[in-house]
Image (cartoon, rainbow, N blue to C red):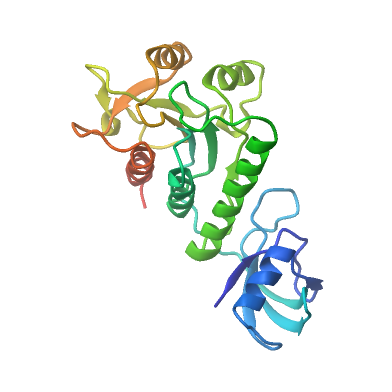
Length: 253
C-alpha cells in the first residue's frame, strides 16, 4: 500500500487535503477515489500520535487530493539504538545517498559537517536549499522503508560551531550520548570494543580525505573516543553507514 508523509494533525474520521508533495505523488501513481493509502506524521513536532493511519482517497483535483483518515496503528519500526550522525559533507550526489541509506538503516538525526577537506562548502541560501533537499530525501526514504519517524537533518555546521553549541547547553537529545570518532590513528580501538553495549551515540566521520588533524584533536578534546572499522579504508559515504549498522546490531534486534 502506498505510504505518504503527512505532517498535519491526523485523527481517525478526519478529512484533509494532502500536502503538495504527497498530492503530486498520489497523482503520479494515478490513484483514484476509493483507493487505500497509508499516512504517517513523521514525529518532527508536537502533533504526532506516533504510528501510522489508514486513509482513503476521496477526491482528486487538478493539484489537490482530499482523503479520509481511517484507523490508527501504533506501529513503530525504529532501530534498537539512537544514533546521531555528524557526517562530513561529501561531493555531488554522495551526500544524498548517505542521507537516504542512513534513514533506511534507522538513524535518529543527521548533522552535515562542513569540514576542512569538504569539497562542497555550504552557507547562506545555498545551505538552506541543500538542507531542505536532504530533509526531503529523508522523508522519501521513510515512505519507502516503512519508518514512521523522520530523522531530522540539521543545519550544516563546522566542528568548532557544533562543539560551542553543546557547551552552551544546546545538546538536546544528544546530551547523554556516547561520542565516537572514526579515525585512522595508530592504536585506535575497534568500534565493537569501544562502543557501549546500549544507549545513544553521536558518531563523527569526515568527508573525502577524512578529518584534518586539527579537527580530530578538537573532537578528542571534547569527549570523542577514536574508533576504527577495520584495516580497509572505506569511502566517506560508506563508513558512517557501516558504523550505523554495527552500532545497531551491538544494541540488539
